[in-house]
Structure formats: C-alpha cells, structure tokens
Image 1 (cartoon, rainbow, N blue to C red):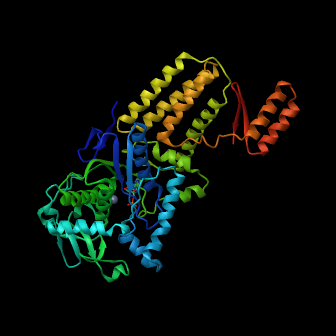
Image 2 (image 1 turned 180 degrees about the horizontal axis):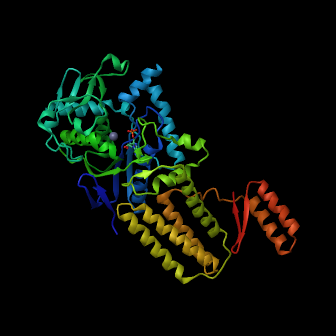
Length: 463
Ligand code: AMP
Ligand code: ZN
C-alpha cells in the first residue's frame, strides 16, 4: 500500500510521491520563542512527528527542518518589557522548547534554523522581489504586492476584492478579511528599540512570513516535499510564504501542505490569548507524566479537533500501561511450543496497521488494530498457546509500531542482574515451599524499587 496524505493545497487526499525517490524534505513551522509553548502548540509538533516517524517506518529518509522564530512583533515586545536583549529573552524559551521536545519524545529535526541567523537570506529574497517589482518600498517598510502574484489565495481560498489591492498590513498576525499587501521588511522605528539590521534594503527587521520562506528554501531547496503547521497558519502565514517563494523563484514551492487541527479546551482553541492553556511544565507539576501527554496528543487523527481534559491524560496513561505491561509479559514468558498461527496473526496485524496509517495517518484506527492484537495475544498467553519464539516476534512487532508511536518504556524494564538473581532465589524458595524465605526476598526486591507479579507465565518484574 502506498501512503496517501491530505493536501490542503488541492483539498484532496493524494498519493504521496517525494521529489527524490526515497528522500523526503520536510519543513515544520516552529515555535515563536516569546513564551513557553503550550500543549496546543505541541499537538502541532506531535502531528509532524507522527508523519515523520511513519515516513521513516516506510523506508524514507527524512530531512527535516524546523525554524525558531526569534524575531517578530511578540518577541520584540517581550524583550523590551523585560529590558533585556532580544537574544537573552528568546534563548530562555528556545532552551525550554528543546527540553519539552525531549520530554515528549518528539524526534528532533535535522536543523533548527533561527530567524536572526538568516537575515542575509531574507534580504536576498526581498531584493529579488523588489527587482521583479512584486515588492515595493513604502514609508515604513517594504511590502509584497499581492496584485502582482496571480496565484495569491490558492492555498487558503481567500478572495481578493478590488478595494484590498494596494492596502497594506504591517502586523505579523492578521485575519482572512485583511488580505492586503503585507510587510516583508519593517523599517526601524523607535518601538523596535535596539532590534534592527543595517542592510542594503534599509535599516530594519524582517516580517514573520519571509523568515520561513528563506529558511525552508535554504535548507530544503526551492521546491520541497512537505510543509507542516497548524491550520491557523494557512492564512496569512503559509499563503504569504507561497507568494514570496514562488514570486521569487518562479518554481512550485511545496508539493504537500500538511495542516493539523487544533487542541481545544471546552470547545475553544487552546491559546495564549484566551488564557485557556497548559504548558507541559504545568502538567508535569501536577504529577502527570510526559509519555501519557504524548499519547493523548497523538492518539486522534491530525485533521480532527481534540478536546483536552485531564481525564484524557489519565485514560492515556492506562493505555500506555497496558502496552508496557504487555511488553514485560512477553519478556518473562516461560518456554512453550511455538504456535504456527502467530506468524500469520503478526503479518495480518502489520498489514492492518499500515492500511490505516497509509490512509492519511488514521492513527486512532491504527491504535485500535494494536490493542486488538494485544488482546488476542493475551488470550493465547492465558491459554498457554504461545511459545517463547512467538513472544519474541510479537515483541519485535510492538517495537516496530513504537518506532512510530514513541510511547513504550522498554528501556526502563531492563532489570538489573542483582534483582534477577533475587527473583531466581525467590522462585527456588517457592519451589521448595519455603514461603517465609520467598516473602523475605520479595520484600527485599520491593525495597530496591521493583515489584513482582506472579502470573501463569511466570514472574513479572516491574520498576
Ligand atoms: P506559534 O508559536 O504561535 O507560531 O505556534 C506554533 C504552532 O502551534 C503552529 O503550527 C500553530 O498552528 C500551532 N498551534 C497553536 N495553537 C494550537 C492549538 N490550540 N492546537 C494545535 N496547534 C496549535
Ligand atoms: Zn513558518
């Protein structure tokens, strides 16, 4: 089966075919480092993560770039308010972002370019747009002339009315009904304090949209495969990225536009402006663990809204616990005769998982396939119809799935030799019906931070 992805540009599910055979180039709009990212933002990075991991699962190599927006209206405002340099202000949130990515087990991009390190690339594109007369100079900056780009609106479907032509918008964020010429370069004024670059197009700083055009094309080329972000970025950000990039290169900028729906709280988008947000830190402080939050964020289809509740994290924890317990059970199985039916079940499960993921990443169905498989294998284990070799194959399949999901805690389950020895001693004592000794050893194991569970298949050890 071949992967199909929904493309916002064509509003259709399309067969995915990268420009270069087995190599995928992918760009995700990264964080604006003016504050801690909230878990709504992390839903966007999680959706990108699942896509990237599944592409790898299918044998593609993925070159992934994610920018760090460290200069735009909000970061400047924040730095001025705190009377510190822009660099110092944004660095703190950039570091926090990387820490959060790690905690959420979101695979790092190959490159995290910072906007402030790519001013030259932005100036070059703006210079080119000026030369082509697609951009023009106004009193307060350089603007993109949307009337000079005939495809303007092709991504978002925004319709241009005559009166909008020639009107300008200087803000980085604006709404669909404000489709005007937008700022590529903002000439310095006193509100920008010490944030400016002296360049051949004037003293000033870039608009937000040009940053992503410049950084994506620098690292991935003039045309690349996938561009990802939340649906709120379709307009104006991504519409403007297309206009700037294609206006400048005359080449198709991106083949597949991948947009995730929002994380909601009580039916409303989780956002800073509404104040209804949780950062990862907030939730970890409340005692939730990051794997459960990861599971919650990835477990529904990326094009469906997801309502956030703390109950949802608890349910996610139960699901992960079931998977991790299953992995432990597989590892601690006693030898039994292998069952010829298991190989077939493994093949079918893999096929069903891929069928769901190939269909525009239907992850909730893919998870249902996995849980159904776990249930079937558990029944076979209970009825002693599975051998050690089978268990190894099941274990490996689960690891393969986890290359996409990233939720299993298989490392933690490595039991130290000392504990294993105690378990053996305890088993021996039990065999010899020396229950007093067996209980003593169990206590000793508990005191060392491990718990035991006696199942029909033998003893399970858990940290
Ligand atoms: P920002 O830092 O505001 O540019 O946002 C970073 C990413 O998070 C973008 O891709 C946004 O579209 C995305 N995003 C923001 N809020 C939400 C939300 N509530 N749910 C899902 N994605 C979001
Ligand atoms: Zn962007």
